[in-house]
Image 1: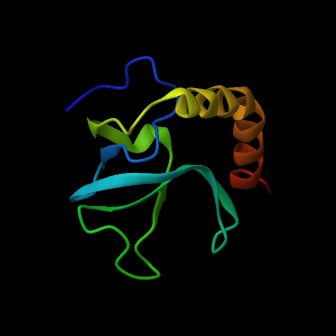
Image 2: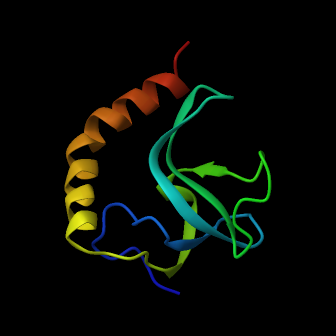
Length: 104
């Protein structure tokens, strides 16, 4: 198991454990919107090693829910470019996420 390190956003394919949840999850998306709740979340994931098991298998969560990183997803020049894009959009994303969650 690894700690966060210097990576701001986990690459697709990373395997994590969440606080208070049994089993592992594999990251499938970053900066995602949940249509059902209308909320924004840092990540979407599916159970590992099962993957997509049906329409309800996706799990959305924020970085703070991660209590263990078991594998970092594949990284190359494309992934580094994606990291830069995510980091450049992070402040705006966090503001929008906060406004959606704490709107009166």
